[in-house]
Image 1: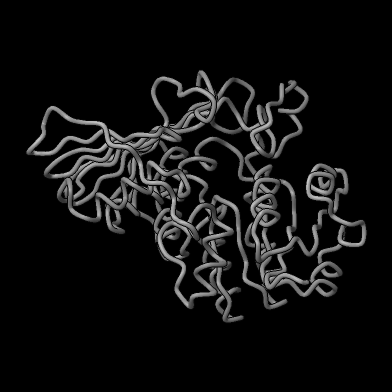
Image 2: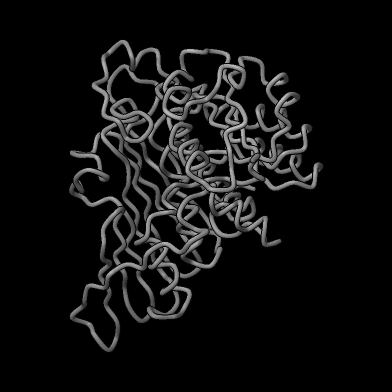
Length: 357
């Protein structure tokens, strides 16, 4: 029996395509209707992992979309091409699911929003940290008022580097040649740790603080000699009520999904009446409140059915007639993009800048 949701994956530049196709493959009401990339070798692992028939493998996106007529398209291009690919696929009338980050620039993000709005379908920006149980539990407690009004968000995140792993977090040992050839290390393609990880921090940070926007941004960034992109950045965001800090790092001592490095990857949220530390992939969070200033550990909530990954979430929300909310919504992700754009310009100009857009 055919499954209700036909989903295709187009453009395999980002290794997360394999993870997202696995979510489709394992969903009881979805099927991989096709995959497409101009370089067939980039699809080989997905084709083998999920038993995708040869007649569902394409190198031309138009043929893929015309023949499969999907309900949703997953896009994983290099960051600089997000707007281009959304504009290419949106006219075919499917929901468009874009792997993070949102876009290479705020103007590109607005192009993406406009292209999909014209079709009446949903544009979804997937941030994998949205599916980390510690952060979901923290958001529930913050919005429930446990620590009062959020006044500071502290974020540190990254990994050993994007060439150290492939889909499903399979470890890879990169070579100098890989770094020279990879789009992750090319400025024009949208490479760099700031573009890779700052969007996570400021988008989820805005989720925690209720969608507040900062007044101004100050960012410094650094990379190894000979690189045209950064491997480390620190951003300070000034809000009406204080400062928040967002730090990105390619070159952590360990990958956080294997062993938490020091500093730990994740968030520390300071409120007027308490604090919460929420680290990536950890089974507990640490809480301080006015009643319990000594602090205590709390087990994280299991992710509920329908919200265990981005694919499951989008299908469940659309089937229920509910809007896409939180970090996956273009409205909240656009705030993050404003902050990222301002941070990039601040680092380039070496000065504090008012929030763009």
